[in-house]
Length: 118
Image 1 (cartoon, rainbow, N blue to C red):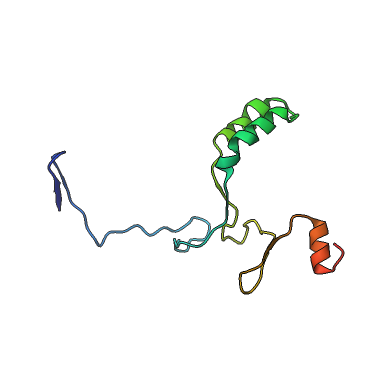
Image 2 (image 1 turned 135 degrees about the horizontal axis):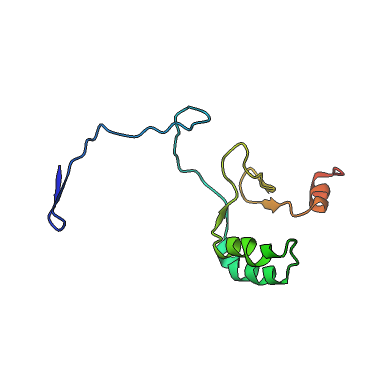
């Protein structure tokens, strides 16, 4: 039991009480754990993205000033490496020692490095 003098409330809590989350689809316990993630710093690009949106031809045209503009205006840093089986695969090759990192930025780069025509 805690008493907050400033507010004048008594708070009663039970350390044995907890919430165990079971997603409705899987009906299995949900486990939260911190894992390394790759982020795109969208907030640093926001102004440039908004400027580029003004130059883009949209069909239907209301998307430019409404839906997409609002989405860009509220854009936050994007976690592109979510550890889910439906997550976004990253075209990044990292050597076993972690020294060399290569981003596959095109099919041409992939073909050159793999020696296979895609």
